Length: 92
Image (cartoon, rainbow, N blue to C red; front, side):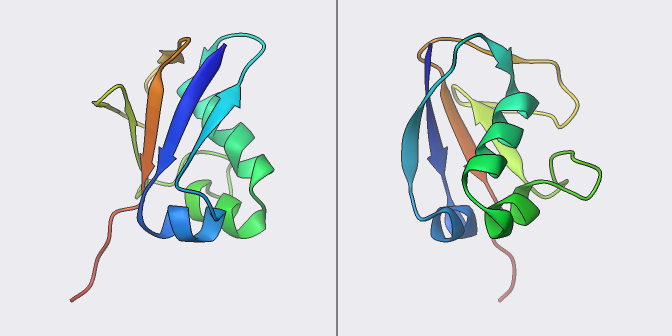
């Protein structure tokens, strides 16, 4: 199963990639995919998107096929899904 993941803002900068195709052996929940990605991209990336309890940071937005997913939603990614992970920009 293949899932395309796109990164925005500082997630893109820290991860060093704007998008990637992830091969999954089985379907999984969005949160599991995000944790896998956090493990793949190093500590700076991980600390930006995962909190100390191992959950998605409250500031991170995740979309699956243009639909925003809440932090605690039980949404499975499917073959050919597009997952977009965004860290909102702030400041002025």
